[in-house]
Length: 338
Image 1 (tube, one colour):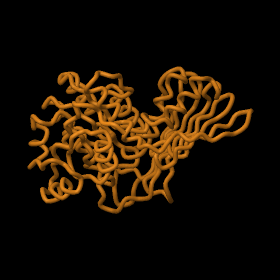
Image 2 (cartoon, one colour):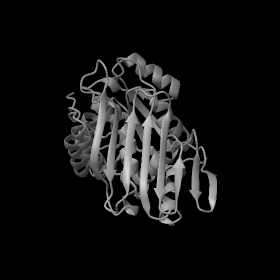
Image 3 (spheres, rainbow, N blue to C red):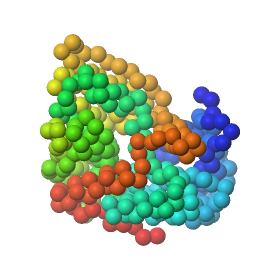
């Protein structure tokens, strides 16, 4: 694939998270963007990360990185509780920000991030990469074309095997929990169906189970939703599951469509369509959803192209996340101070 032209993004990376290799490093290499600097709490870890992935240099701290005038984009894949504070810091420094989801620990903090983005006049985007892949685009096309008829039901499940004990995803002070790490995808996928459902869904019920030894942290959560047009939805997540399940099923009055892995479609690019005319399987391509995401983000930053995600969208998702926690008997995640 050809590069983005003479004006690549100059990216700074917060932390040395494992996800960064597939979520940013590989897409940046494929599209010709510069990895200018990385910072981590442990400088030796940052140095190892930079050497392994071809990052140009190491910053001595997160604060130094966000203040670096040679960096125009900050990528934030830190623990959930550190998304909000460092998104705010990067926006205050006038940077464009690509933040791993969720954008903040709770809706109040997400609204502060939105206000900071408005003041900065820069691009802020929450990294719901799945939305940019042809698998999700195809699901939306099937609804828009009317092949599935009127939307009646949608079921989304995002589940993984349990992370090890001590993982930040099990930490309440770091805004951990299954809904924060996984269920936000399920909720977001349902929210994105609003154009074919009469508007945004509302929460009707929520149930969750607490992680043993981690008070206040959800191991799993199931949410029931209803759309203005009468369709219903289930958004489920589980962070101690027997295997991997990242599926979505959309049922209409004339048929249904299923994507076995809508979150990581590069691992399974199928969309299975069933109507009165029979069943067919479409393959939409195994190019990484993260590559599509970075391409779209760069087009917005450099050329002002439109994006389906912005800070308003991030706030709407976090309001729904908080509502799910409250209805399930949990508190919304506390914000982390830095």
